[in-house]
Length: 396
Image (cartoon, one colour):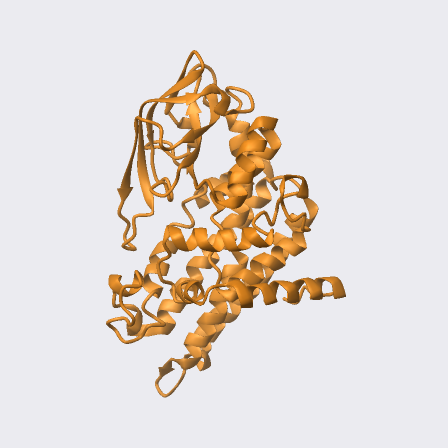
């Protein structure tokens, strides 16, 4: 979709492309487009390059050091970064906890945390899910008991993405067990270096361990790390989830993957002809492209019409975007054929120049496919999103 309908937007896109062509390191571009594994250092390096240009806070207002870009400019930035093969800016700080701090934090919290998020001095993780409190998040049981100037935390979080790298966690805790379960939740900022915190990796079927169990044993968190009002954390959590679910859709990344899918299919020969000449496969690709265009229009409409979390619309976007990512990776594996089957850990980690299968372009596709099996679960499962839509849109 061509969004450059004004000279100003055309100039803006040219500026972004020039920056990406001159500042995006070639090794990072190769890792992203080749579906290889990125390290913490890879993500931090790119974040700091973008921060030096003043663009790390692409969605932030200028008063907090952001760009002040319009929703359309932010969309173009995301699209150009994705098309160029740039790593994502880790969302837990910039896109998740930062909007909560801006909206509900006190002035001291804003002054301290927001600059550190922009500069990537702090790496954040999200302490939401627990055993028995995943999609039913309000059932969480991590207890935070007030003792003087501290909350004392005891319990567990699970599926905590990138906790092994994080020095900070934004965390939902149980501060009151009486009444409705949503009414006894508070939102705390937790220093991961505090004594009593243990992080244990969960090994996934894609071969990675980027999610973790996090255990809390008599962990003291200063009361000054409370966001907003005690027992009002459910309000802040829902505000954050609206931002998370919209960003999970990943329209820019899906457009890049669609381009790669077409390239793979054009090169694949089946019974003497290109796979893109197969009418069944071509129909699947065409349907996917049409659906992606419709999703992009919806994302733009939501961004343009709402300055706050878009409620049930974010659930619609999350469902469609994540299902689309799954369809894309399924078709990419199909297009790559047998070359995608070899699981070469050394190549994926960058320790080998070429994959064992001899097809470097296909070697990272199965791990990407396996990773995308989780997209319809994390950030609120598809079933939960459908319930939200039914309640808030259909009144059921």
